[in-house]
Image (cartoon, rainbow, N blue to C red):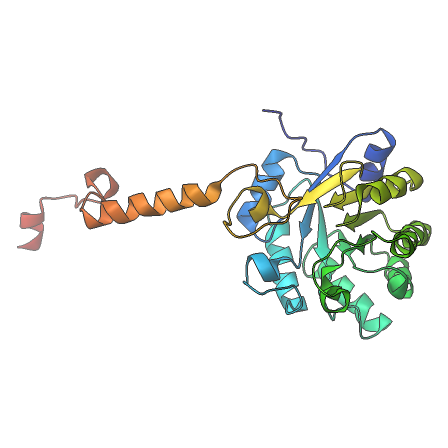
Length: 281
């Protein structure tokens, strides 16, 4: 097993990784223990994603996640002090009302959550907001393609950019986001040919999820990656373990041992310093 790199990741040295042709690794995390595991493994970017609305809260999409919930989970992650760059995912409604409110919410990620950057979904509709965040000295990660917060407008979780007009718009938005000054762009659920063209054209890193192998890095949702769920998963997710089965076995063994009286045993119990009969007289 490779020893994890303890060097602190920053927006600058992640950009340097692209220049050197090195792939960037990213994963979601929503709590202290998961962040510690990601840190020990040597992950480059931890995204505190609003995907927690689906994988932790059980909602059908990400729309109900609040700013307070995102700050709560981001703070848990940053308390793990991971070498990874911690990016807070701005939830639906946090950057849609006004530019002033958007900056205020992004500042909360930095000041209250301890994040080092924020991620914001959308292209040309969000250019002015992104510019304002950057002017407030907040590093911004862009997000193009399938943007889950637009799921109702998109008509569901569907691949984007398959048609020429859609592909050209995504490509143009990626170029403009780079000009604005975002440090990286997530490309979600777009054809690999489009992701390849964007990745080759940009000087900043692209992070793919369902966008093929030619992006400068990849991101996956942690519970999906480790096989914690046995529910349907999109085709682009690779399960590197089946921890759902491990958890089931552990719980089954626990239930059996409690029921047959073998847990806890003598070694797992505490004892009085004196004989119990003498003590209770």
